[in-house]
Length: 132
Image (cartoon, rainbow, N blue to C red; front, side, top):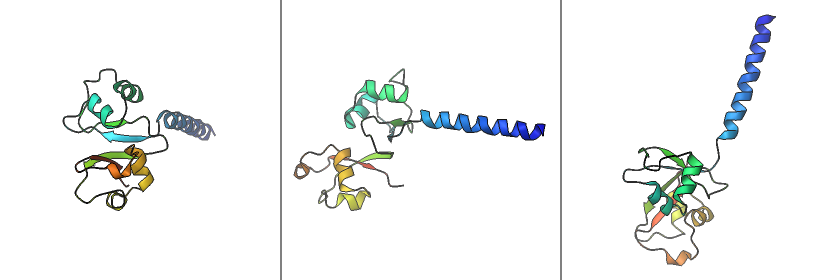
């Protein structure tokens, strides 16, 4: 009986801790730090600020980034997954990109903050969610 009671108490604690940990992990897309990245360049690329990135990721010293580190990107509510960027190639447009990148057109518009789809240009960085 004591063993069963101890097991039930441990199980309840495990469930409670899991709920707290799950609640603390914010949802949103992530970006994986690449060689040469800084918080400033990442903030500029994703339309954010250094302070917002620091706050969202609990970063005290913005100079301490590690290649491969995943950063939560604020400002993309309702989206989850890993974000990547790549330059647009000749002939690519908002009709071909959804097929090439595996994202819906409206997702690409929102991620890239595109106001005028006709104004895309060669080598423009295209932000997309990595399908997974």
